[in-house]
Image (cartoon, rainbow, N blue to C red; front, top):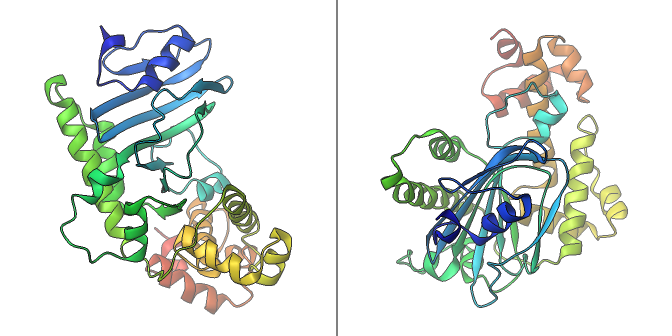
Length: 319
């Protein structure tokens, strides 16, 4: 029976029990009275498991986390905004919905209770840090990768999804696999996904990492939200620091540690991303888009756009 299947995560079994439904082929389909969508779970072995969630519930569900184990040093990978869009999204939602990955050490997630949020479209992978570390045959690792694999302090990183990562995600979501090969195939893809992701993290140039706490993480994400809400206004470090209650040095240091880029470069990336989306809509001219996003010099706008997108905004607008 599915409820006794050892390859299904207990959290999925508990969710099925809470909603009063059965799990079929490692997948729970949300009943219409509770919402819609599905959640699939896979325990590949004692070192790695995966949960694919694409659903919307009418309200949050709080469950005890039966898989919580302080003896295990797990690393959490949350791939978000990676499902194909089925409904047209506003430009603002598209900017905020750029695919990314959250990577956290087990010290960040220490709760015995977990919230099954009402709207989730993610792939979550948990991997044993010792198992992952043993796959490397050299001690020459960057400080970011070294700290992540040691998993002895609270760290959180967010990484933008590169095409190579999205390609693997698409294969996980769309490939039709015979049930005999499903666990084998998905485990290989999950490990390939983590390998590609770590190759990107390895490129980060931080020489020293600072231990995080939940308050600092919350503050940095509020700063990020403020930046994304006001892409027409270049961020002023002193003002952001004052509003966040951090020193300018700490703010810049932790922002770069989490997101892998400086505040201004991060802002500029999303600013140009919004410009490209507005040009795609073909509602505004190049100059109107430039002015909307705070560029007073259109030559400068064209130069920055070309640096990020690879072509001039006028060329892009004619595509």
